Each structure stands twice: as structure tokens, then as C-alpha cells.
Image 1 (cartoon, rainbow, N blue to C red):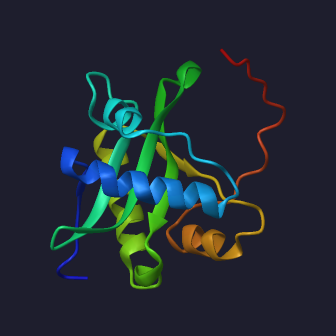
Image 2: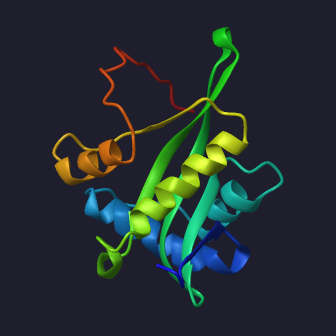
Length: 150
């Protein structure tokens, strides 16, 4: 792990991260529609929507964590959602995921946030164990949610 560096995403990382996002979508049975332009806008644009950290080993990306802001306005509290966490298959179990979680936690705290959330598929017990080991508590379902598409 000594030669692995966790850092914020850069322009040159976008193609590799795009491949990883597509792979994660396929793993979940989704068809990724994200483009390189979408990633550029959302990670590096004038008003970045996501904070993305990458695990870098000699210029090769081993994984990424994408964080999305949250708020509880009525309490004046900021939070962050660990929207995506991916570690390449060959690096799983090597500590890269934990390093990304720890760096995500540190970044979240540095931004004045008071909590970080993450969701997993109900059948993904391995991920649930990783998050519990990293200090996350299991939350009850939030109740009904609604959306409108534009």
C-alpha cells in the first residue's frame, strides 16, 4: 500500500474512471449512459457536482470513490454520500477500498460535514461488512421517496 496514493481526480484520469463506471454499471445490470463529457462536467467543471478520489499506483488507477453532497437544512448540517466506490478486481482485498473510504471520510470532514452515508445492494454482505468495519452504522429505510423526471 505504500506506493498507492489517494488523490483527487484529474483530467487525464477521466477515461480510466469512465471505464470503471461503465464496468460498475454492467456489474449491477445497468447500461451506463455517462460520457467523457458528463464526467468532465460533473468532476472538473465550473460547478463540480461530485468530488472524486482515485487510487493511483505509478499512474495506473486501481479504483475510485465518488462523493455527492447532502444537507439537512433544518439542522444546518452538511453531509456527503459515498455514491460510488470501486476497486479493480485484481486489487480487491488489498486495502485499496479501505484507503479510499478513509480518504473519503477525511475529505468529508475537511469540508465541514458531520456525516457520510453509503448504500449497498441488500445482497452485498461483503460490502456491508467493509462499511461496518470502517465505522458506518446500519440505518433504517428512510421511508417513501418520490421523484419527477425532466
